[in-house]
Image 1 (cartoon, each protein chain N blue to C red):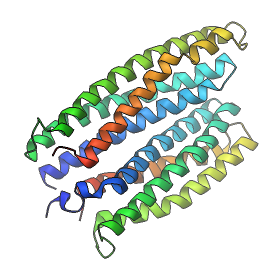
Image 2 (cartoon, each protein chain N blue to C red):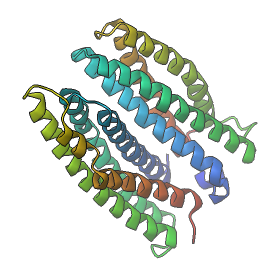
Image 3 (cartoon, rainbow over the protein chains, first blue to last red):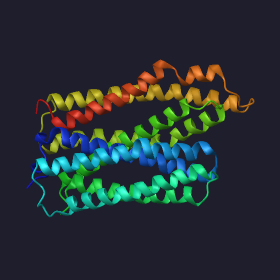
Image 4 (tube, chains in turn blue, yellow):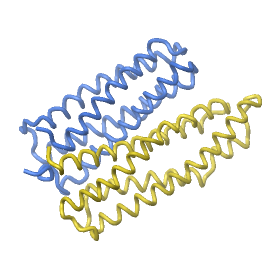
Length: 147
Length: 157
């Protein structure tokens, strides 16, 4: 069984939405991590505010596109009953990611109210770093079709 | 994992680095455009340097491993989606590089103005909103988006 058998060119739009959403999720979350780290080292309101805005206007919509595209793909390719490591990782990291991102966004908002690089900013940096690692392992597993 | 699985996973990783790094650079530029104080614009534009290595590594991985995958899967190098993707990759890199150089000049001006009183400045505003530079950056983004379209639909395969 080749990897392409799961998703050939017939996947079309849902695959495009899923992959583009995942790539933008990676890019926006990397930006959040960078801004949060700089906000800890050089406490300025501009970094706290930018962190919150990027999470709200970039990361959460990207997550939504990634997750909806993924669900659309599962439905279109009839993968609902496939018990594969790569697919389960996608579901777990995708769904669990929403909770992580909502908590991170809440903490980033808190940081804008109490600027100065305190613990909310540190927590934003930690959570976004952890979720980025999980995303990287997942995209690798999904591309290679582990299991 | 087979050779094909390694190649595909690393090729996709390269694409994530390329698009992720480009997204990071784009966001930092957009946020910088909205700042009036030169010191804030300089700080944000200065962070773009952290995106550059990801863009470079991603660009290299996507091109080299992409061409290797074409060979491994017995696709034709003459297929439309393959050569069009290579052309768009070159266009994207060229536009991104030129746009980036213009933004670097804006950062240098913002840094100088930050040391001279850090007051809002019309010249900086003009340089930051330089239409040619912005068009080049958006053009690079559009080229990479089209590459993704070609990779998904593979027209002419």
